[in-house]
Image (cartoon, rainbow, N blue to C red):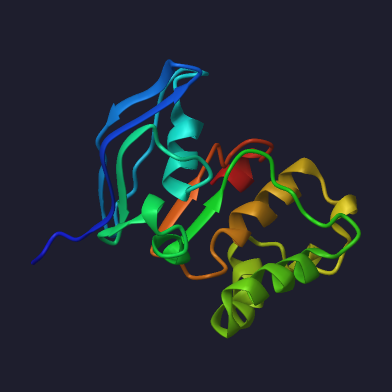
Length: 171
């Protein structure tokens, strides 16, 4: 059986103002595996995730998603990635369902058909038609996690996904 890497970084580095923030990160994530980045605040975890997602350009090194060099083709590898980074942002005057529908429309018809399924996965069907401004922090966090699953991605990146969740939501 071939070990396919859904994500691979090679000597990934990022500097801000000449100061190294991420140094020589080499990751190999196989399909179906779960990985976690652990470290102190300011250790570079979120910066590494932002590099992988193409929100930042690396100072040096390479990032491959499904063997595609992504920082040279920003529209390529990320199509199979779902992510939640930092604070979830939504259209507060729209319902959770409508927020999902708008996002799903960017991914295409398959994602649009998954809206109700994903609302079920994050157990938010009961609040799907409420305006997001009425949601608690934990409800918004669940919605943000669900949004990462809309496009049925090969790679899911969640940055501190349990922030604001109660123990049941964390489970």
